[in-house]
Image (spheres, helix red, strand yellow):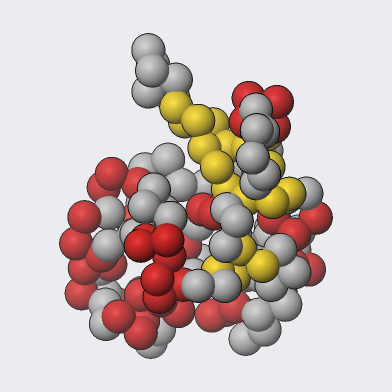
Length: 142
């Protein structure tokens, strides 16, 4: 049986945890939070460290040092990341749901994410100085 069906997120090895990431790139998009409501919205503006062709961080091991506001999802403190996109494997598993059929662990093919249209590759742009993120808010349909 697959490890993600038998283990809770905190029980996974680091290798198992990392393999859950489908490299969609959505967590690398800049987000805005409404100070009054706490609602978080995504933009189509991606972190300067992401490779938009692969949707992978170009400096993954040093990302939190180079970009202090970068996410560092931790297995033992996952509850604060409830705002992750509905397609995120970490959120799905945390919510007791299955991985989608396009997820590389199910499909056996990393390209299945792009083929399913789940990655940010088609619409993301790199951040640049002076951008007004409010002009780049997006909404995903679930």
